[in-house]
Amino acid sequence: MNLGKIKELGNLENELSVLGKKYNDMFTNRKIKAVDHVHDGFKSFFKNNNFDIRETDREIEAVYGNTKIIITKANYKDSYFGAYSVWHLNYLVDKVKYRIMLNELNYYPTIRTSVSFPKELTDEEKQDEKIRKVKEDLEDMKKRLDEFDTIKWGYGLIKEDGNINRESPQFESIDELLKSIFE
Image (cartoon, rainbow, N blue to C red; front, side, top):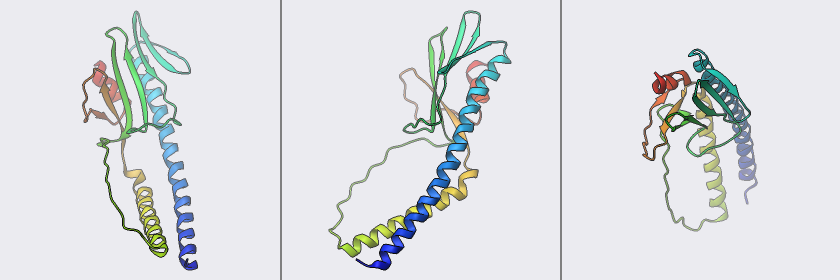
């Protein structure tokens, strides 16, 4: 074992940890704002259209006469595969259901896999490989931090009718999304 490489790896991992925490804090703050934007935007949209608003811990209802439109409340702490956050929107009169997904605009999640059969590495080669991988992760994290404010988030809309549409419509605001359904 090379002490210089052990120290280098430790320093790189520490730097990656510090930058990762910074990124996670920025991401969480942005996600909280986006979740609040959906809840507030839903209420505002329907209040402006003369609906009564009823709210519980789990959902928000827009009510006009016998018509009820319900959106579930998202928790910013929840994690989803392929989305930063998810809401369920139900239009009870026609029994229409939608899923709203918060994500980067123009991002459509995919699954990729790869299989490799690496050769047996010596201890020194394993150490070098770890250093290389952490350096690569560190560069990726620096790039993500640099580009964080330039990446637009938006809302994808999926009608839950059994059809799969990989490229669902996306909107920059919840107001645009609601207008696309109800106007």
